[in-house]
Amino acid sequence: MSDLFKKELLFKILVVGDFGVGKTSIIKRYAEGTFSPKYKMTIGADFALKQLDWDSETRINIQLWDIAGHERFGYLTSVYYRYAVAAAIVFDLTRPDTFFAVAKWLADLRDKVSLPVGRPLPVIILANKGDVAANKVPPQIEEFCKKNHITSWYVTSAKENRNIDEAMNRVVVEVLENQRNNNLYNSDSVMLAEEMHTDKHNNGQLCCSR
Amino acid sequence: DGVTDKVPEDELAQVEIFQEVENGLKPEEEDTTKSNGHIHYYTPFDVERKDLQKVDSTSSTKAQCSSIDTLYSSKDAEILNMSREVPSLEKVGSQGNDVEEPISEEFEPIIGEMKDFVHNVIVTNASVDLPCPTGETSFNRSNLDALAEENNSLDTLDCIESHGLASPAMSACVSPASSNGGIYTPELLETFGLNLHRIEKDVQRCDRNYWYFTGENLEKLRNVMCTYVWEHLDVGYMQGMCDLVAPLLVVFNDESLTYACFCHLMERMVENFPNGNAMDCHFANMRSLIQILDSEMYELMHSHGDYTHFYFCYRWFLLDFKRELVYPDVYATWEVIWAARHVSSTHFVLFLALALLETYRDIILSNSMDFTDIIKFFNEMAERHNASAVLGLARDLVLQLQLLIENK
Image (cartoon, rainbow over all chains, first blue to last red; front, side, top):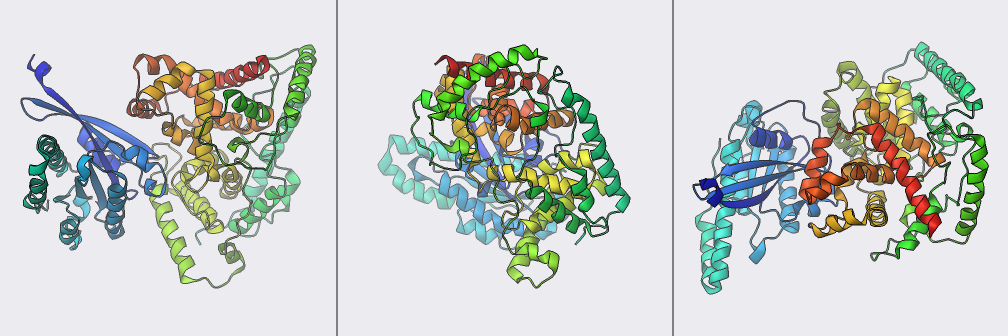
């Protein structure tokens, strides 16, 4: 019965990153709790839904959009990105070049997605395939995050179900914070100019490695 | 370069297969009462035995590929010569006009759109599939002649005309010189290396649920893909290409034939990939067609977050519906698409897409689907469609459009 009174939220979260880093695997793991080594490569976009009973008053429906790794070169991304509230950029620990592509994906996202009030889109970074190469985390990642106002990154493994739930929860927290701040902004714009500034810095640096 | 030498016997075996196919066709060719629209054989290329024999079977596979390719290219890029199969069909309206016009943002009046389609649709016997008494043919013909006259006055063209007609068969990029030896710049080698890396990743996960794609056969797929990219470095590898090679390889089980066929297929398909303009045309055409043929659906799409951009059809067009169907249905569907160029429309893929959409019309309308819903729906329905029903509906839709045009 109490379900009827729950507040329902819908979050569209993008999962991007170079081809073959494991975006589909992460999404299937998170939404369906399964892993297969046999997913097809994604063409265009696919997505999965996940329902989270966040707290006693809130239910969150997460729409995870799985954007094909080659799509950055295409022109479709802006349509797929529309109405997104957050993004996870995935790279493959076994392929160092996929980490360098993270910057390009971030630029693409920041370029094409803007939230109301001009806030930057909350982004987290997932260093996937941690089951094979957990020790190969690129040393530049901390600095990269700091420079780009990315508050967290995780070593994940879709195969071994490592850190996927934790990472997605972190995204949801950031989206909720963002929305709370937006509400504040709407009620009192003068106050927020200050708050937004401090908020961004206080809440950063929550980096965790696996 | 990983391309293995071929045993000459393989080539001979292939030649024989073609001979059989050719012979097998002859009785049907003479039998005009038999169904005309269906193609019952898998070989999409009207290969002449002589041409194949010209290929020196002792040279390397790659050299064979390029010579086969040259032979094909010289044959006016005709993938499939179906004309002898369909003696009772009349072609209406001119087809190969090269003039291109930029796509207008505003909708042209619907009637204008339809005229463009008439321009392109080759009107066939009322039902291509059904055995039709020859008497009916002449009746149809006279009808169509009238239509043809009407069309002669039209020279409106839009993007409908501008794609599908092959880009030059052989690329002009520097890499093909490789076949003759030479020195390559580090940049060229680096580009090729990047392409190889992408190919490797996609080859490994190409149809890995399908029995054929293991060990040795994946090697063939890789060779075909790498050869294509080396010969077309200006195009490069793009995701989806492996999906297009796969069904050809399963049918031929031979690298050089698959390569030659793939090159021809890509003449049309390359325009669908990110650097071409065919995808935008498909979307624009879908928009016009759905407005004409199912305004209720168009209204729904427009009012539920406006997904009349038709991006949810992207994969359908990119891969000629290959991901939407199971393998046996892919063969049937590809054959129909290839044959349709000659018997019904060079844009038959549009009618297939419409048919796929119309098949689920009631579900889409009753659930008031939005962009997200429809993407999810069609992703879940992949490989579950009733292909023959969809193909049938696609033909009906061609006829429906023709009737609409005739009645105007």
